[in-house]
Image (tube, rainbow over all chains, first blue to last red; front, top):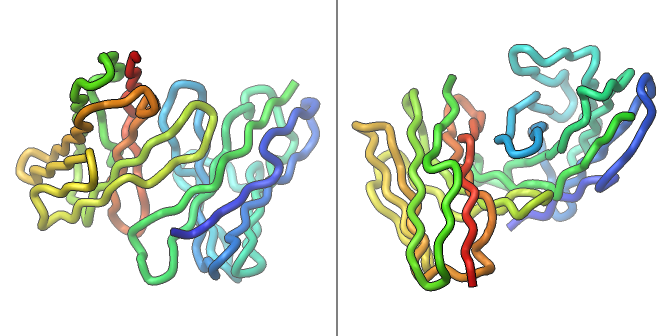
Length: 116
Length: 109
């Protein structure tokens, strides 16, 4: 299967600051990546679909100006949480489809964000 | 919502017993997938079943799909303590994945 990494694995920041989370596909080219958030003891909620070289597609209710997504290369997508607040504290997970298997996802290990 | 709904929310069994988790969804699907998540970690893909399939096996895992009832089940046979994790179903449609609420499985040694 494909290998997806995320950095950092955890981050603590002060309210009002911005945090960037990186998602990398290590052994393949990913034209599409997905970003999810997961609150404690809850399921994953799709936030946005990141497409290489074009604007991300956001799910209903997700603020695109708050969660900035950049997919500038085939191996890297970034999620920037701008002006973070405590309610943004969550587990953020990226995933990507692998090669020609368009309906199988491979997930990164996740990033735990805590906003004080 | 297109998300799957799972039951039970939590399941506690003894090692060696079988564990069954169910998932229901609301829309048509291309396929349905099951994932496992250890606490605070990413997800691991377990098995995929396509909409034209009724049953699939992978090692100790057995997945069934009933598209008429819009439901799927995951059976883990001869469970082990290492199977302790949360299990999620995910429906794939319109090039997106929507996850169920998950079942937290605890296998007691």
